[in-house]
Image (cartoon, rainbow, N blue to C red; front, side, top):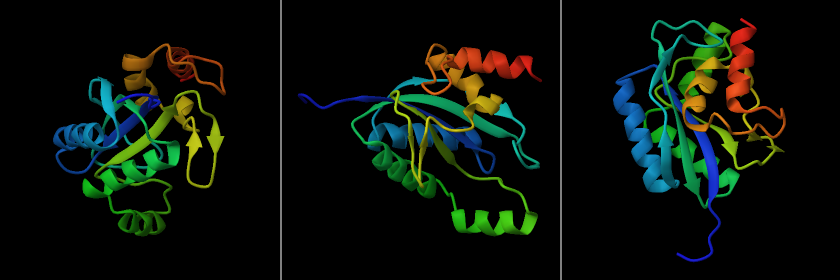
Length: 169
């Protein structure tokens, strides 16, 4: 291989439609094959929908990957994997318009939470993920695999962010 730079990335996978555990496992396989080596996996954790009402609970899993991809290449590939696993953003847009909600149920969502210590904001991607500190369903699985990971903007570890969130409820 040689001198390729490997980036440490944390992604959060989630879904609440279809065979959740199998879909999350398929996401791990596809990420491992196309994005980079999966070096850590949290347990699959279940939670109520965040930001909207849904009958089915969400299943979420945090993964750490080592990749050579740049952030926007990573985004393009994770979105392609979402589509392959049944994500239909056109249907979701129509559903959100009809319900007036910001979010809706989905077959697969892959969010890039951390990319090394990169801080960036573009039309397509904000790093680190701008809402992670508000989302227990993201922090709890991340804490299993990256508790000491420091949020470069907030100056706190994932474990500290989770503790802050739990103590503010």
